[in-house]
Length: 530
Image (tube, rainbow, N blue to C red; front, side, top):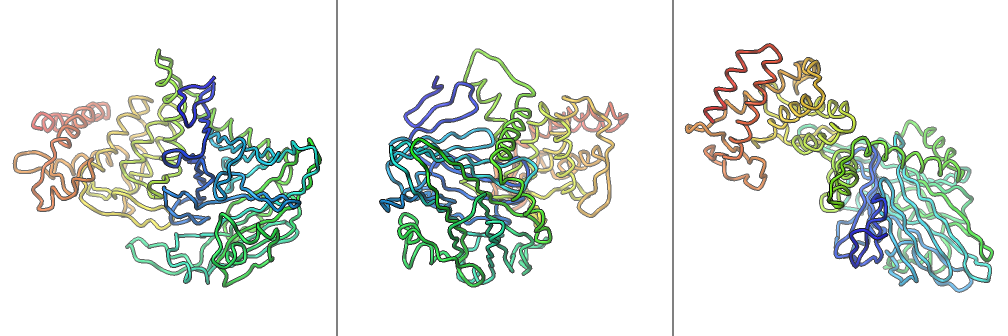
């Protein structure tokens, strides 16, 4: 049964897949798939990008943000060797008109189904939890009365670190190498211009080794974009696919891509399955990549990983459920809001609109409340991570980047208060007041309890009131757009006054339970003044 159907698609019976029935949606409809450290974002056209740890500073594949064309991503081309006709397994980049096309955005995976020239294709993309890779499972079925001789070409551009607008400069630092024994293209880079803690860029090697592999011998491979597309060529009609051959170029100095060419023969009524891998490991741990590649040579291993991936998400999302008379409310709260909070907002920290990667002090703290009903220990971890980005006087980083620890220091006035806010929510849900005693260092390395971190946040806000007794807005409150209201140090925030007053009243209860009756009285007095 189709639930909440529109002219572009619907939810399936169980609500855990959104089925897109035509590719020309009003804007790209994407799935952000990130069960922790490694992530993928893929649209209904097949476009998107991959990353490890940080979606911007440590991007593995190149991506151009163009939501009109949506034609930058990782693609698979299929070529009929007898007729020379070719198409892509996803709508982009060839944009052919298949006889059938559906995209199933699921929880932790996306699947592309199409039928063209009597070939039924299924492409499944997923990220196994706890592993630094994505898996593409391709299934091709020959529904014609004759044998089909086909060529399958993968294609994407390597990024290998920060996005590189000056491609002609950056490409000279990239290096690819094909390993015939593993049927794998390896790639790395001798430049990684991530900023340091002061926001200054420094030059260092990219610390990872990326790999793209297939579980069967290749007919050829390509590591040079010009050789694949042809001079002035295009993704819609690349020379390598038109001619049915790749040149086998790899090494230095080229514009680095990865393309693996497989030749397949499918008898009438039969099907074949091909497994592709894309991932990245520490450069010093090439053996880890080799172990991963060997592990996923078999279809059974991939099926087990896919089942484990779905079970991982099901276990997380089904811990608590709601049942109301409103099926839409149930669908969103039981499945999709949880999934988006975890995969997109907390772990992925990226999207098509903003390919970020940073932690926002307020953003991920707010989102971590989703764990209170799933696994409160994960909320604890998020609280401690954010407390470690607080200064001793109570102010905090507005955001910071993992890997480089580059951070924003400004006067946005609400950030710090989300720490006691989420701690209060955590205590109400768990009753674990012992958590308040856990020690976490400030930015300067001096340790303090979670309780002290919260008090410092509240005290800092109380120390920055206007002559009228209202909180100064600083560089903005929860509304970041109000960033000039306090430019002269005079702007006030009524919203922040309400927020702070409520927090003081609630934290007064925490102070009392912590044996701090004087602080309780002080906070209640300030709340009354506000």
